[in-house]
Image (cartoon, rainbow, N blue to C red; front, side, top):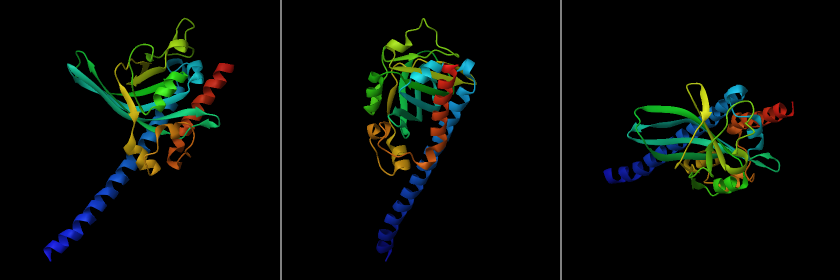
Length: 234
């Protein structure tokens, strides 16, 4: 009798645990979409201290990682989860979920949460992103982005940088160096929102419909792009 009860309860508990995980993962992913949209909107609402209009207008993809955690003692680390969208022939793609992780070396104490924004600026950067996993290395692949209403004409961000990176901490927005960080697809969040592990490339090239829960983030992306175009044409 006891053995039969165990055989019945074990699969049931496993099923309930799976449902609980799926619900928690979906809630977390939905919150991340909302938070990413809020970060992008707040940055665009402060143009004199944010991303220059011509930089955003020329970006092929936008990635936002709310509350990237940096910290450590002597050895440091970075980790966060966010979302990305790329331009397509018909507009912006559905959001793809990303994770950012990597180590650093240096004298540092404490833990700090920052909002991270990354812009893919050329075809080489786009192909790296579509590969589902790549490491940032060297000034040619990623650089701290210029800040302000307009990018300085003397900078070489347009020619050389595959990605421009920014961070916001305690209300201060600035370019950020992410040497050695690894960007890859967040499969758990992808499954939670799309119901299966949809390939990164398929989402970011516009072959997947945008889920309803992504509406706030997509609205922020489209609004930011519109604001950049209007400001640049003034």
